[in-house]
Image (cartoon, rainbow, N blue to C red; front, side, top):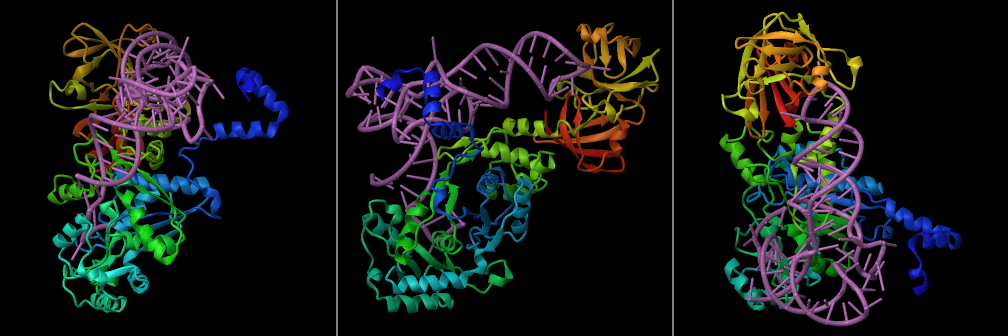
Length: 523
RNA sequence: GCUCCGAUAGUGUAGUCCGGCCAAUCAUAUUGCCCUCUCGAGGCAAUGACCAGGGUUCGAAUCCCUGUCGGAGCACCA
């Protein structure tokens, strides 16, 4: 072996090829087939990789939630597996489900590029949870506890059992039935899983499995239930019953697996493989990436909706013309490590640019922002064009001459961004038209000789005919920008992706009578 | 207070399990050049990282210990 190690790698490879070609093949295949995501553990053990995405339908997805869809969907493709969407809607009060969110989430998932094989709702399955609770009580795995929350918490910290822990299974069972029948008030009594009250990790000690909630569930089918399971119980039972082989979820549920194992042990079930990922952050939005704070701002009218470009949501980036595939690629590139990660939107934009550049027809947009705002053009200014041709004819797409050229009339003058206005007496190249010299109140046409551009003698700028310019409202994550585009933008279909040259890509969102709304994607 | 987890360039990631092929991969970002009638696309190049300190070893990003920093849980939220 040491002799082999002293040999140089090239020779070693040749040697290995001679001795054991199949081993070499395996070695090299290993190195090359690095998929978008790391391999799931122990996939050989099961006939089929079955996973579940378990969103709480208390709102549409933000970019962090989207990671769930992107990663699970991609894994399903990698393994030709089975994807269950299970709505964990078992809290009608604190994290009250939003009836519109069920479909919104499925739409968000579809946008990311994935269809679930199965869709279920926890709130349809209460009877199943009750049955397993009864079985667990009878097996000695759970007991009804009437301790006030504070009091139990103290005992738990001290590692001491409460009096209720010794109750007989029969007594606990009858109390549980009364809970199911709605005979207890919230806070009066709960069902606890009997784990190990002295467990060195206090997070695992006798956790609550069921509690009473008087607020009716928003779904009519579940509105009569008062006794609701907690996530760890519900999710644990469902994972087993639906044959989940791999759980992939956030780091906040790290201890869940350990808690649920106690239940699994009572039932003699085998716990699925688990992968936990860290939190996703993104610094590019002012709105925090949390369902509740986005919801607050939408309700307060600070945001126009979940798809407001300022919101870090799936609906927002979709409306801006970012393909779901771009988001999925960027999100899966984050991997599944347990450390926290920053999602950089530039990664999403880079993926998207790659996907849409070919399809996006070119247009000019002259932004008409306040004077001095040089970043956004500095305001539109109008100039007559003297002694020039009738029209400018920039291509629809520089790499696709076959898509034709735009015909932009110049006889009524042109609009340019004041940032692009050359000093008096200086020249500038109006893209698709030619070189003009600025004569304080006009542009005097000089030449159509492209060598001026090629030699770098004049800078090239975009412009818009002053004749019937199309008003545009460009909606960006940093706020709205007004401007003027060439008239024909009026004819673009809603949903079309465009590139405003030297400004950036966007998606035509609406065609009003006198203006077009475009959502800005990225540069 | 108790328990668990993590740390590779601005960002993400590969490599860590099984130490040597790693003066560390790829993408993105930034910058420069080429090309292009866009600040887009395309091409080329440059920039930039193993949290710190000890230990083991001929050899440590990789193994061990300590520390630092960060995250999570200890809810009748998910």
